[in-house]
Image (cartoon, rainbow, N blue to C red; front, side):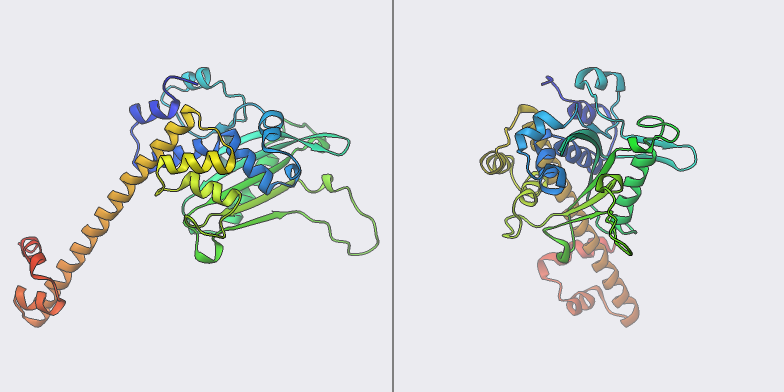
Length: 322
């Protein structure tokens, strides 16, 4: 455990918005091995029969790589001893993709051990202008094509590792709340009864985890875990209590500090959002008063009477019109 974690240094020295810092804290919380183990056991068929302890201690390799860009990259490498995959996927013709969290893991399989490449993405905006599932499939494809030259060369396609892309979505529409959907490749028997070995074609899987609201009775298991972890409304003490008592997650000093930082940032963003809403409402009311005065040839008082503005609030609108 470092005296001052990388997030703390980044907040102190980097120039970035509160929302960007908030996103970074989400990624750091999700990159905790205990959290990743719950996600893997709940969403990946390879770990359904494994315990959380087995996954964290036996299967997750090294430290998950986070897409945070620190001020002193050499210092990050020295302090955190990152051994996971690089989160930047470069291609001359396809551009650059930066993953939130990417790492490798082994998994038990009949007759031996297989290796997987896993990407976890935190998604705050459920409607970014395209279907998120299509972005997830694209990421899966990039993670497979990026293995050329690192995992295999020339025609060694049998060395390709299976990839997972897991999107954790907050602020979901009602119909998607508290749902987990998994998308993968399946064989269809169009003619004859030959069956290919599953591991030869089941090379990419996308998972969509859509969180619900606090204390929603349908939010159980990993859905409740992630809602508690990423909630902007719960206190640090409440998060600690639930994570420890219900999920057996030990609150290290670093994890606790990052949870506290997230709560502080959440409060700041919420307060700022409310202030912006009040400002927008004020501007809209000023516009309506102005329009009524111009179109109806009314006085300020007549316009505010028509809009039903309380006497105690009229002075600020009068001042706003000057």
